[in-house]
Image (tube, rainbow over all chains, first blue to last red; front, side, top):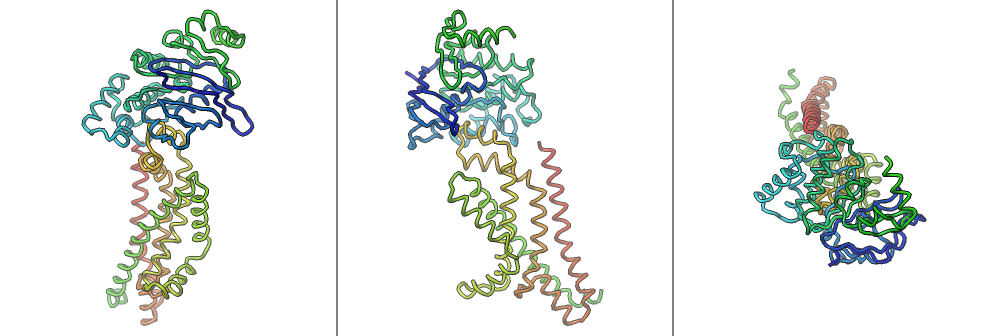
Length: 245
Length: 213
């Protein structure tokens, strides 16, 4: 069953055509990496999936609901689709533990004792159990991002969106975050859509790679195919540029 | 000193009314001000317009005129004392300034906070209540403190409509004793008894909240 499906989706920012006739199907449990040069529409695409950006035309089905239908309750979609941001967006006025516990308490009405137990388990999993009582301002970038991932996981979503999760991190912090993401990808039920420039992560974890440029999907291949023999000239050029770094 | 002793109950009564008026107006203007601040940042155009018109009307008319409006016009239809007219006027007038202060606070909270909250499943209202407003109030606290102190001092407007407050009682004592100088010194000291602790409390809160981050 497909978790996320784009059908002839168009998106504009004023006169700028940000997404051009996007067709894309992501099945439940799949891990898909979205790559492409900056300004290619990767972030725009991923942000449409939980309604942070609206689409102008076409159909966008997420977990069976059409996001372009005004009757769709966006909060219900977001309960099932978590998002991890480039700049973490942790709640600055809450401790790490409260960051993880808040949405399950308010949105899912999860029992407080159970909520705390689950939150601590998640913090343990991302290696932050000892930072539970700290404020976000007391965490390093990598720790913030791992806390943000724990916050998303606490909602027990069906899908997780990662919008350049390691781009704002110091190089030595990136590994820990990618390790956590790798663990999540191993969980076969979780659908993951990841915008990233980490090619080694894509190679190791992704089932599929999607290459975008200028608002269009130019290539949609299995990871093996993509890295061994990219079909598109633009993709070949992009790969040779990022891999020579 | 004899002046204070002879008229102590009068001053004390005025002090009580000023305190009461200030507390009511402060709570009311915080609620109204926050409400109109939120209206101005809602995506709905009509809400923005209502919020903006409210703020512009009450912020740009002298407090005295708003007070007279309630005391002389509104009181014809809804029975209200001078104390009530003045307190309501003070509340509405101050709420317009608080709305602007809180709105500025909300706008200076990083946009990622709202996005993070919405993506996490929180509704707009939940995000406002738990994430945005607590941060906005912290940012706005120094200016809110200013508004609160102004509010206490502006409550002297009650004197113009027989509001029985500190200023009103001061006027009475001055008229009876002809000792205007000492009377108003005493009145000023009573105002300081209200405003100085308030100032220090706000400063204390600022330090406390700074540490909490």
